[in-house]
Image (spheres, rainbow, N blue to C red):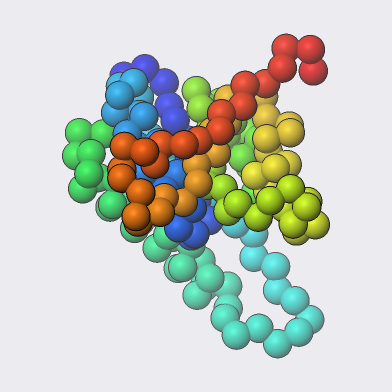
Length: 159
């Protein structure tokens, strides 16, 4: 076993595609796969449909479903999951620093919309101390071998 590839999950199809891509890459490299979700409960002053326990169950379910899907496709792969109680950006930056590679799903909002919405992945890309790979959601009509279009960013040495 050589190293770890970490995937940041958020429950989207893009994150699921990132987990699938990372599992294939981890298997190719003989690496372990770590699936993480950063989550902080923030009750608000306005009425909220859910509660802390329900939201935490949803988050844990996201991790469990991703692990089960990856394990079905890659039964020999060492896969772990972790729910990290912290904000996503600092959590993913810490994961990028300790993993051989951090893999994130790209929602594909585009530059302006991503900037206005405060894209977690864009913040991580700008600040990461280790390699980050962004994986887009595959299109059903595209052959599987043609879906491996990703963007990888290696940190600059002069930071």
